[in-house]
Length: 105
View 1 (cartoon, rainbow, N blue to C red):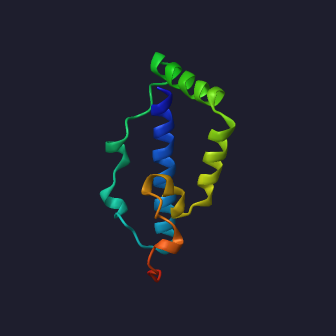
View 2: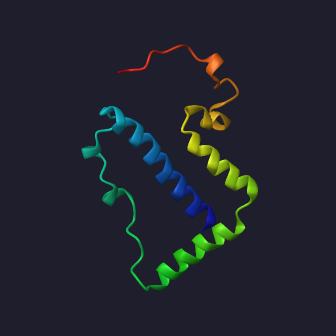
């Protein structure tokens, strides 16, 4: 459950970072009209339900069990640079190994 909550938060944060950068330029990788999050994401649990209590408990447990390294990792994500993905993209995913590309205006 903890991994699921962490992955969900990571997904939402990634969507926010990617879409906010696109919206700032008024250009879109995906047309917002084509993405209906109501149909992609499950609704929150009903208020005062056992599912809501379990959801809250999972969030509180994730907060309690986070390490200093977890906190530093999440804070580093605030840099909002593509090279934050270097750990999954590979050793050659560095500015000096990529070709120069002019930004699209």
